[in-house]
Each structure stands twice: as C-alpha cells, then as structure tokens.
Amino acid sequence: KSILGKYTVFGVASAIVVLAGDAPIQEEILNKVIWLSVLTLVFVIGPDLYLEMRRRALALKITRKLPFLLDLMATCVQTGMTIESTLFYLTSEMASFDRDIAYMLKRLSDRARTVGIDQALQDLYERVPSPEMHSFVMTLTQSMQHGTSVYEILTTLSNDIRKIQLLSLEEKAGKLSSKMSIPLIIFIMIPVVILIVAPGVMRMMERL
Image (cartoon, rainbow, N blue to C red; front, side, top):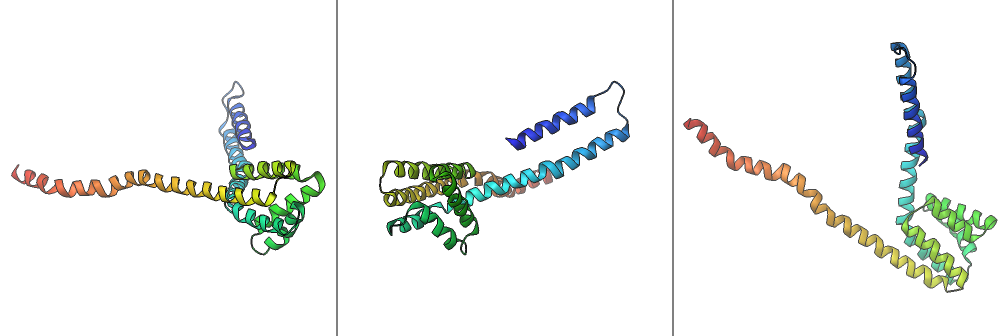
C-alpha cells in the first residue's frame, strides 16, 4: 500500500508540474521535470520495489520451511521445554543452518520477553502474512490459552501444512499442461502443418 501511495503521489505531482501555468512550458524546464521523474523512480520507488520483492521472497522461504521448524519445536516441547525456552534454544541452534529462520526466531523470542508470547506471535504473522503462518499463530495461541497439548498441536499442524504445500505443488503441476499447450501449438503443430501442406502448395505453384 505504501508503494502504491508513492506511485500515486508521484504521478499527481508530475501531472501538476507539467500542466501548471498558462504559458507553455519551456523545453529546459520539461527536461528537468523528466530527469527529476527518472531520479525519483530510481532512488525513491526503485528501492521500495526491491525491498518488497525481497520481503515476499523471504516470507515464501520461511513458509516453505515452517513444517520443519514445527517439528523441531515439537521435539523441544516434548522434552519438557516451554515455548519461550524453545524459541531461545532454536535461535542459537538454527544460526548455523539458516540465518533467516534464526533471525525470525530471535525477533520472536525478544518480542515474547517484552510484550508476551501472544503479541509476539501476532507480530510474527504481520511480518510473514501467509495462510500457513496464520494457522501456526492461531493454533498455538489457542493451545496455550486452553491448556491443550502443545506437542500434539505442533505435530498435527506440521503434517497439515505439509499436505497443503503438497496439494499446492500438485495444483501447479496440473496447470503446466494448459500452459504448455500454447508453446506446443506454436513450435510443433504449426511447423508440422507447414511441412505437410508445403509440398502440395509448391506443386500447385509449379503447375500455374
């Protein structure tokens, strides 16, 4: 939304500068406006677009690895550790395997110490707004509030997320056939038709 707002402000400001005034805008002023627009795109909007792409890629990466993280959390909880101590332990252990997951756990652990685990989980969902993360946050929050077994909740949720990710992959694989039909027609069917029709057309042209 912030990026869209900057685009809107940038477009409106450019239109006002170009259309303002009764007299025609001189070529020098117009060139300055164009250069200003280019610089704004490169140094203002460009970094935001890059950061947004990085944020989405990071959220997708964390979402894909969420089932493995839940399995590790379930193992720690089964040994008698609390959720807070589990987060603190996995932060140091995951640092050598995945820095992104370790950083996410560190922020979650730090927030849990200051504002509580419930608010820390909500903040985590705001940073990684995926359906899988929403299920993790809601399920874990309800489990801690109602006193149910966190281990069983984590293992069940891990299996469910794996099934969802597998169904998503199967859906993408099923769509490949329809996406491949257009290249198949363009690069295979049309040349085959040309090879079949071309000899007859050449004979007709020779007779004429």
